[in-house]
Every structure is written in C-alpha cells, then in structure tokens.
Amino acid sequence: MNRTTLHRLLLVLLSFQLASCASRKLSIKPAGFKEGLGHGLVSPFASIGKYIFRLNYAIYADYNTGFGYWSGFVMGVAIIILLFIGMRKWATDSF
Image: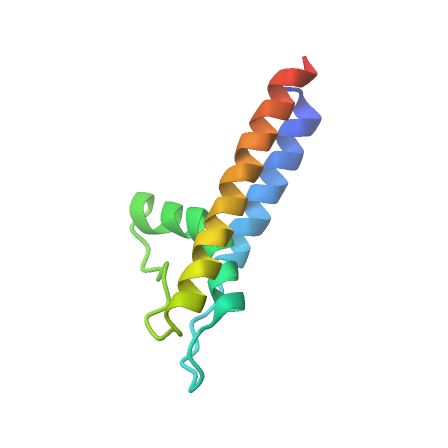
C-alpha cells in the first residue's frame, strides 16, 4: 500500500471515528430506519471505542421502532463490511 492510499484510508477512518462520537439526545420519537442505518455505518468505529479503549459508547439505540431500526442497522453494517472488502480487493488488485 503506498503512502497516499494509507493517508486517505486514515483520513476516512478518522472522519468515521469523529462521526461516531455524536452525542446521544433523548427524543420523544423512537429511532427508525435512517437512524439505524447511520448507527450501523458507525458501529465498527464505535465498537473500537467501546471495546478497545473502554469508552462508554452506545452502539445500538434502546428506544427504536423494532424491525425498521434493526433492518437499517444491519444494512449499515453490511455496507461497511462490503466497503472494507472492496477496499481490500482493490488494494490487492492494484499491485
């Protein structure tokens, strides 16, 4: 992996890490599909903060709509996994 690609990857990871530090606001409306999708997209980075650095992050919203939130969360996690697999495949095919 060349230096430019590594810098870009670190910049993307840093931006996701900063996005995963958003404050939790208690709202009257339960979290739905869009919130689940967003939480799924940042969940790997929130997991790093929660399990490696022992920070108090919530990875999953307690007050949600059920299947809508769950399907968005799973879709967000799947997108992140596919992006990581795609970046890995692209990196190995480039050389």
